[in-house]
Image (tube, rainbow, N blue to C red):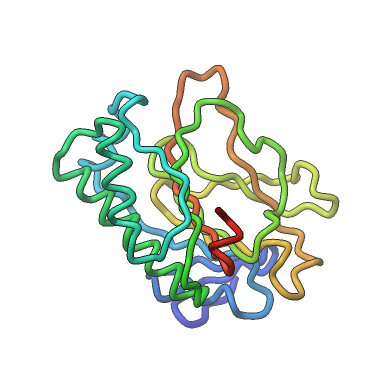
Amino acid sequence: MTAHMNVLRDTDFGIGFAEDAAALCAIREPGINAVIWLRQPLPSFQDWIDALDPAQLPAARIVLRPEKARQAVTQACNSAGTPDCQERARLIDDVAALAEIFGNAMDAHYLRLRLDVVSNNACRKFHIDAVTARLVCTYRGPGTQYGVSEDRQEPAEICSVPACSPILLRGTRWPGNDASRLVHRSPPIEGTGGTRLLLVLDPVSDPQGEA
């Protein structure tokens, strides 16, 4: 591994491990196919979100300007009956901050924001997303799994992104990313009784075409 600009690089995986949000911009550096911002969730927040009834977890799918994320997540929480408390405010604040950070990093005026509540084996196959780039942050449940594969099959070594640590991934539409061997998937959880809550952000160049 090598260190550069507050980013620890795993050259075998083509991943950078960032110390802060600003270092997510390392996604633009050669040889970096993904950046993980390593951070620790507050125990009080994690205990709260892990204990919520799955029906009270906010869900949303919307195209918006980054600065509208706070309003959208607040509405999603209201619709789901997410308890109005300090921890809910932290969740809303964090999604809003990540939307702004991602929008700036991608120079995107619009984003596709998804809050997915998952209890099955969604996206269980290892793949590379058909987007320019994607940010994923798992707030509840096991995090995104990733590894290196020559044929986009299951990697020999599978790693997991820690809870509440955003991962920013290049997709197949990133210029020159055709040769990337870094693949990822949602962890299989069907039959475990567990529920995941994850945030997914994509840049959108034509919001009218997304309607």
